[in-house]
Length: 244
View (spheres, one colour):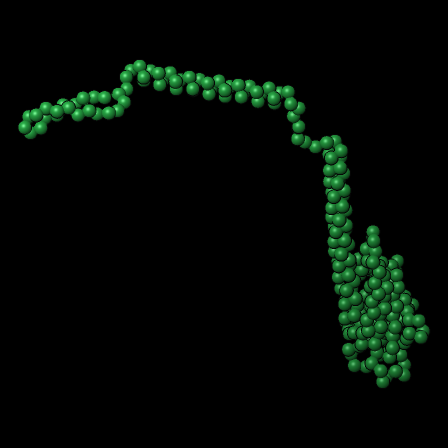
């Protein structure tokens, strides 16, 4: 308790008592010692806890994460199977693509050869099947029919619009063309095209067939490709464009 003197306006002294706690240096030092002890005890407890955890971690068997040998073998086996299937599909697709491109190139070559032959046959005259070589043909002569009933011919000779004696034939699975009646021939189909059958049928070119416009039927069978050949059959009918 602390006594405080006050004066009133009539200068009369009186004493008022103020209640409360008045700290002293001794009390302050006691509080500091108490806090230090608490902090030291807490730090000591933390150290002991850390040591206990380290001892427990060192003595307790640890479970190491990873894969077993069997799991690795199974994973490698599955990976190998997937890779082999993928590579097999890739190789198969590559082979199929190569086969399609080869067939397309060969068929383009065959179509070009047939188109050239068809154009010359349409504009030609004096058609003869399986002629004796060298063939000798003249304008104004009649040709010779060889229809389906006769079995057709292995070669075809005719006069072109330019006056050449044209001959087409099959020789060693290749279609050949001659412009000099059969003295010399040149191949018109690619080596990867194998023609196994070539037939020419002539209708309306012989004597006594003036009512029928001459026309030629070309039928051929063959294979395309070397490693894995694909077979094909083609037929076309050509009518003479020149008036008979």
